[in-house]
Length: 205
Length: 207
Image 1 (cartoon, chains in turn orange, red):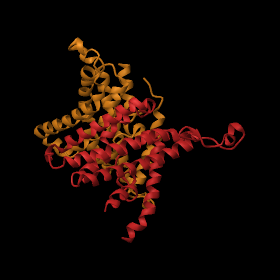
Image 2 (cartoon, rainbow over the protein chains, first blue to last red; image 1 turned 180 degrees about the vertical axis):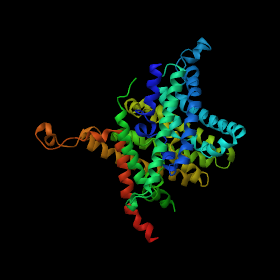
Image 3 (cartoon, rainbow over the protein chains, first blue to last red; image 1 turned 135 degrees about the horizontal axis):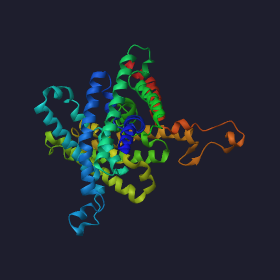
Image 4 (tube, each protein chain N blue to C red; image 1 turned 60 degrees about the vertical axis):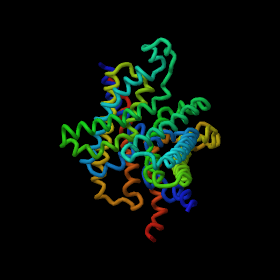
């Protein structure tokens, strides 16, 4: 249990997708003009992460990992398919995003109206594929750890995009040098926020 | 016309400062110059060849499933790059870790395919891809030079700052360890955007 909490908290603060690894920066910069849309995108990312990561984990564990196919037939005991992980992970992500979009459209039109426009964007969001690849690299032991990681990193991403959107809303009242407006100042603020987030470094349970 | 295709992405519509594309997989590899150079090369090759292939396929791909076809082509090329790196440059491939895989979701590639390769002939598409990859790589290399030089006093692993300057040897200089930390990459890019916009503002206003 402690380990799960640790993975969760680490995902939100010290290993924050945006501040430590710059994942998902494109949509983070493009969709952070107002808090409302930022929250929408953040929730959508969290949602898709929690759905795709466990699927990719099972795929990795039972199909792609070295020796995984040996459970099916002993002749394949030495097969190592991990080089296929990029193509399979991205296919799973694209397919899951499509599926989630269809399900939401059918059962919850209200949610679809809020999240719908963001879902196609998410298929190519680096944060999702990045989380899958980190999951593969860090070798989490079981599926509950993977879910804890997905929840933590998703919430971390949500936190990051909502806070930059809140700051950017306030920024429209300040006098920034013209060439710095928009993109430039967003980069610098993200950097400063990253430095602030580094103070969480020692957190452990 | 061809020259424009090549030169514009390098200077006028440079992917990172102007379009804010492809930052995701970029900044984490800029602590040192060497991985940044390899990353720049990898992205250039993948962008070039994926635009070439998809431009050849542009009349045969049904519009509705084009995104997934694009992803598959890009992912295959990235797997090739990754395998080559693992075989011939194991150390660097370890340093780049997941960021080679993240080339797949690099927005520059998808963006250029959608905006250019699906509407143009193969050769201009290939040139456009290479040029955009290089424009992206340039930013990566500049950020990496700044960070490695100020953070560790080296370039490509060779010390550039003279030994005598350091405080330890009785000098006045000390490396700024801050530049090795992730947030500094963002701040360096932010400053680059500032310089870039300030320089280009004139031509924009004159138009």
